[in-house]
Image 1 (tube, rainbow, N blue to C red):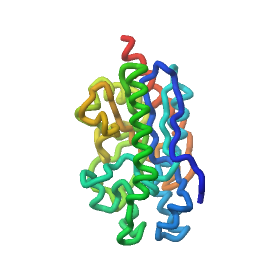
Image 2: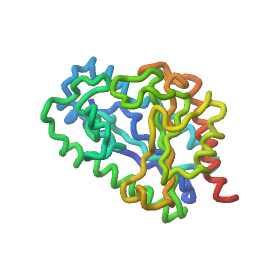
Image 3: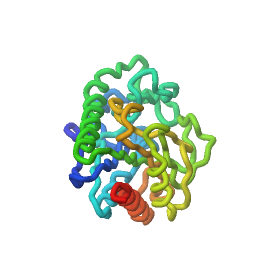
Image 4: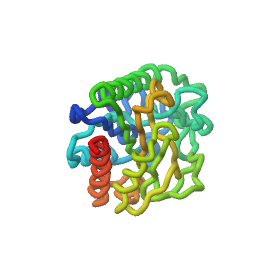
Length: 269
């Protein structure tokens, strides 16, 4: 598919901004050297990409960055999560290993084989996962040094109907799911998000997906690093499973920009 796609991009914002919009799952790009290790035929792979990709979330983040009064930073994955998933634990701590969807997926959203039995994930972890984690850690470190804090807003989307791989599919599926962490999501950040997304059809906490991304160097250790996951139900802005975006994209970009503006204003109060 692609030989030389950038693994990720750190798109600079204002030097004073603590905010990093993290977009890990928006790309469909799979390098040819990785494609050769996937057992699906081309049609099956395109279908899987339709289901697994958080389509257009990079555009939502870009729109928010453009609309915000102070430009946030953006860290955007340039490769599909079928290469590596940078938000999974790369070891036995990852609960999604139970369905073959740890840091390197061996199964699809429909629990079919993605890679052959006995597949060695270590080369992908070394080539893609660790450099991504190191770069995101560096981005947070830079914000701490420049702004005294870092606020990671994780931008995701999810399907309106559960897929077979989901481990917690019985909960609510609101237009906006806010994923939280008991250490890294302060009440003020959560309140800002609820206010910002008021006009988007409703929010709920940690359902159907919970938690948020923090680099392991800081996870559970440094409360100067705040984090929140924003999971957007896909029918709010696009044709499912992998179709074009609609008018909802601009509405969501504006809401995300309002959240960014709220974070920036919070420190000035």
